[in-house]
Amino acid sequence: MFGVGLPELAVIALVAVIVFGPDRLPEFARQAGRMVRQLRNLATSAQSQLRDELGPEYADLKLTDLDPRQAIRKHILEAMEEEDEAEERRRRPSISGPPPVTVLAHGEIPPYDLEAT
Image (cartoon, rainbow, N blue to C red):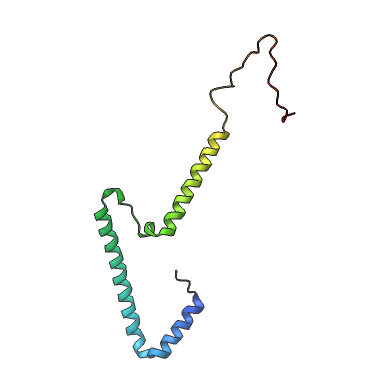
């Protein structure tokens, strides 16, 4: 989550035991747990209040949707998907049939492309 792995957590726990001592450490852990719970409740209430203020069309709003990096990534992916769909439609054969045949008049020379031959 924060880029902290098991070795880093072990070092933090060891430093906490040394600094606070084994007697006061459980009380600090309880306080930290309470603080995390309060922050989570605060974030949840802020999110629900934001949804209520914005109205029913934003009922599925998440806080991660407000992150600029996520929004840009989402819009870029949508644009790429639309481009892929348009390319796929261009590749599909036309349902309308073959192009109309033009008949040359008597003595008319057919079109000639020098670059194609």
